[in-house]
Length: 115
Ligand code: SF4
Image 1 (cartoon, helix red, strand yellow):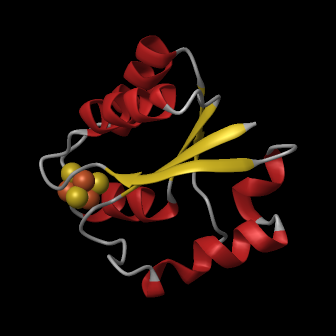
Image 2 (tube, helix red, strand yellow; image 1 turned 90 degrees about the vertical axis):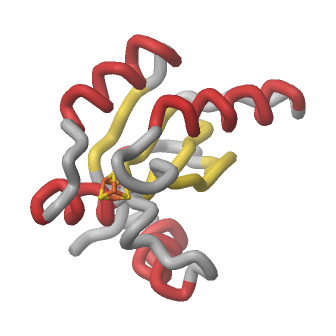
Image 3 (tube, helix red, strand yellow; image 1 turned 30 degrees about the horizontal axis):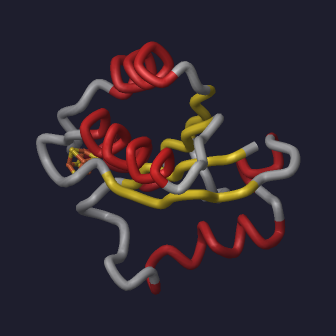
């Protein structure tokens, strides 16, 4: 499956050092990545920052992928988004998940790396 990872813009690391947990889980196929066969990460983006623009960001990713003749089947809401949801994020992740499914017709998986 072709996957897009959607991360919390406040927590993710801009140069990816702080995203090593995701990369490790990807290489080990552990955490939520273990739930998907033949996984190919086609894009890695963020919500765009508070108050959160995940659908707009995914529309942009969708356009860019289509321009390359590609698409995606699943969106991972990264573990940092779940951490943000528990602590300070004002977005309703249930609503985000619903909108992603409706707008793009893709699967949504909550979480990426093990905590
Ligand atoms: S706290 Fe929520 S809206 Fe703000 S950057 Fe993180 S995920 Fe996005």
